[in-house]
Amino acid sequence: MNQLPENIIARARASNALIVLPEGDDIRVIRAAADATTSGIAEIVILGDVDIIRARATQQNIELEGVTIINPETSSRINRYAELLIKTRTKSQLSENTAIQQASQSIVYANCMVAMGDAHACIAGAATPTAEVIRHAIRIVGQRPDCNVVSSFFLMLFGNSANGIQGPVLFADCGLVVNPDEHELANIAANTACNAELILDEPASVAMLSFSTLGSARHPHVSKVRKATKILEKEYPNISVVGEIQLDAAISSEIFRAKTGSAMHYKKPNVFVFPSLDAGNIAYKLAERTSNATAIGPIMQGLNYPVSDLSRGCSSEDILQNIAVTACQVLLRNNPS
Image 1 (spheres, rainbow, N blue to C red):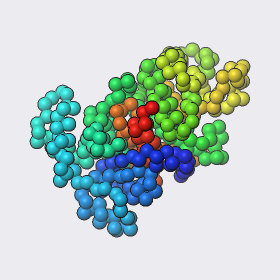
Image 2: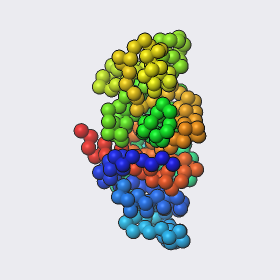
Image 3: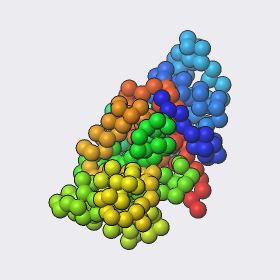
Image 4: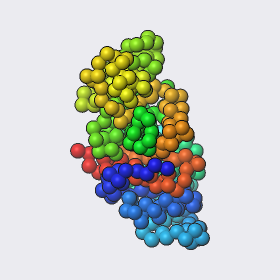
């Protein structure tokens, strides 16, 4: 596994993030919580039965000093969170008893913590389906008013020996939005560019990917990417973007020059925006399996506060890296300027 660059770790530490992990009975989560606390990446709250969690940690020689453990079923915050659930339920009335029962579920409790300001971010998915993670996040934490779609990105770490792409870059959307229209695609690009600048601490350079490079092909799929690029250029003039563009032209100045006849506007991208979930999902998995890349995410974007998903096959190191990236998102929330 490729390690996170030290500058990303430093930014995570600077955020002073408090992150809640609802799947506290999972040993991978317990280990990641301990490692994140020991390394100072974030302050961690894990949810679940206190005795069970401590017993499992002891069996694995994991020290939980500094980690806060909360049992939602016995928490003094439960009634306050139940009130929040009642307010966020729009389609039908939610009774107080039902709301209390829901709030006692760890995944619901964790999102309530974030929505109420009792935690900065939530990370789940080690033992919870992605659809459930997303559903609770949108319902409880809520979608940002300025975002027309909740999307996701992967922070991709490529080894020094990788051809074409080196260093950390962001891929979007590889996890949520199946077939974005041009407005959604532009919004995905803008949000991912913002996260790239935040996490990588460098200006974003966006490649709007397609099977065409600057008019080399005609097709409705190409037109969508071209329109999204124009929307991005108009609404976010400070973002460096090129599109539509093929992947090989995006990552090689020589190929860019050969296909366009000019290298004047070439800038190596650190954000790759895919035209569909098919393309994005295939691309990041292909990079993982054939280029020895590490994919951290999917990290959701477009929510009022950070919520991140995990693969159910994740390791404790995967969770730790996700904690660091999510903590960087908290840095934006704490310092919006």
